[in-house]
Image (spheres, rainbow, N blue to C red):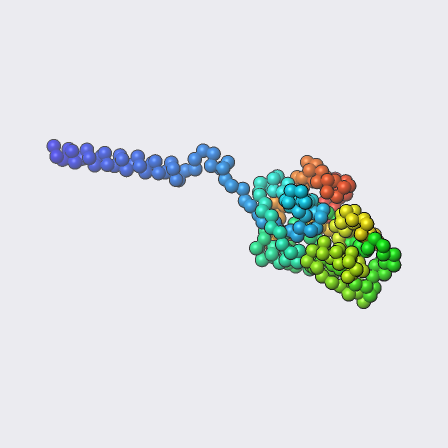
Length: 274
């Protein structure tokens, strides 16, 4: 009899252990229904400099960051299934931060050029820009690049405008962290002119026509791209795929018209004609 009870106790113990084991397996080893749907989307940090309107700036009413680049990268994230975390920083530090991996994405009116291509990878171009000259509204002697020879020129540090200004014969170039500071230097008479991206110049001049005017037209043709760390093909493909989707569904054209004020060009480099 004792032997029978011993066997019975052993069978019951094994049964309890099996039941416990199965319960654990259901809880830990097999994902519960709906787990895949509840997976968190990846979040990528996006660096920008917030005085580069209309591409990125702080809205005076809401205090939030907005602009063409900000809305574009958010829209790309929506169609490609990722979130973005905005990181404001000095313009001259954006490419370096993307290069080292401290930042995932650089979206701040970044011109694609040979020097930057050595440091980071770029998406297909999403905007055709150029450089322009801003002078005081009452300035009548400076009408083009030739007239900038020997003059004092204000620029934003790390920009292609700063590079271009330094090629002008005899020019004294002064760097500023923000384009708004460079413009103030022109307004106050500390500099004769500003050389900076044409659409950004246009935005600020239109806001302060009593203080500034643009001269000389577009100086050079440039293209903006979104930067990622070299070799990060997965993220680069997401961005390029997202850009294509936004162009196909019309959202890119809506954002372009909203922030730039005109219809986007039919094609940019890297895009195939239909």
